[in-house]
Length: 374
Ligand code: AOF
Ligand code: ZN
Image 1 (cartoon, rainbow, N blue to C red):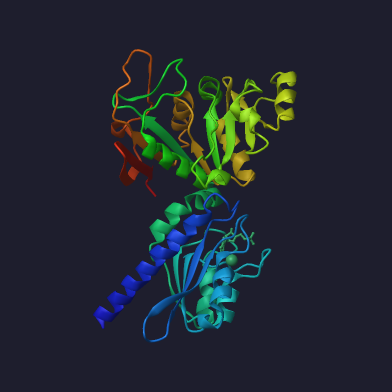
Image 2 (image 1 turned 30 degrees about the horizontal axis):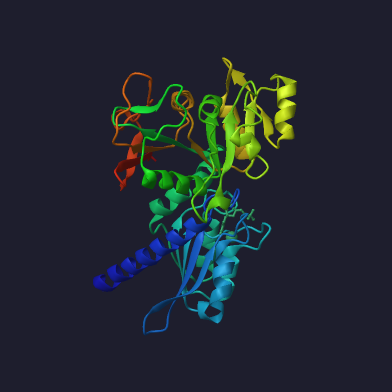
């Protein structure tokens, strides 16, 4: 008996891992909705088979479950549905997914993360149980929640989840003063950074970086160019040049400029004529106030924000306690103290309250990731 139950636990974990991998496909593309995955697994007695797959559609609707159920059709009857988030229980723009699962005749639902949305929380699972469906909760819950951290964070704290990304040289530098972009990591690590950009809703840099490096902040991986995040520049005085790569590409990939409403009106006008959207920022000591900006971004539906720009901006986010995740790439070459810009952070100075969740190697470079202890 014990052996049978542990093998079905193992099967559930294996299919949930596959469902979580599927949910990754639309990260950064589902607006205020989380990117949820669903697999319908049918067992005809001779073995298990995936008969339906669904991931929250681009833009956030339809949800994952009805898409997977539509593919499964009659084969959903008696099957097990794997869902990375508790199925919704509310009548939104679509009918509740819990209802769709009940109507389809599935016998079991295996769920990972719980949904903090007050319209859903606990009610999705309760509806399924009331209809006689066996429900197993919290299978690989942490793994699923890690991918949905943006949605979960935004629901609870009304702010996007902030990932601070840093690339640090062997001697602890993130750049060279007055030198623009310098290579700290190799091509594999850079490709990985672009993949992170593809999965983020927005990316942020300071005006110092925008002026020194003239970055594009887009995702340029072959095939994923359409996945660039919204680009945000902290620019209290609206100094971004109209001929910068950011301003010139603002009509293709949105640029939000967090600037004071008192910034030079001519500059503001010429930037908005380029397609740059100005968002009125509160200033503290001449700098854009971050908590208010993050509230504003959450209100625009941004759930995940990658901070990729400059020591001053990184330091400001750290000082204000607004970093939820640290993504640290360590290169192998030294830059030298003369002219080097020291990193505000190293592997040895990760703030208290963070725990390491991932370590990897990309080419010659090392990678480590920490999140706030939950
Ligand atoms: C699911 N499956 O694939 C997703 C869910 O505005 P609505 O009607 O789309 O509802 C948004 C809520 O739906 C969101 O806050 C979360 O609770 C849930 N997202 N639920 O059953 C899905 N993306
Ligand atoms: Zn739903």
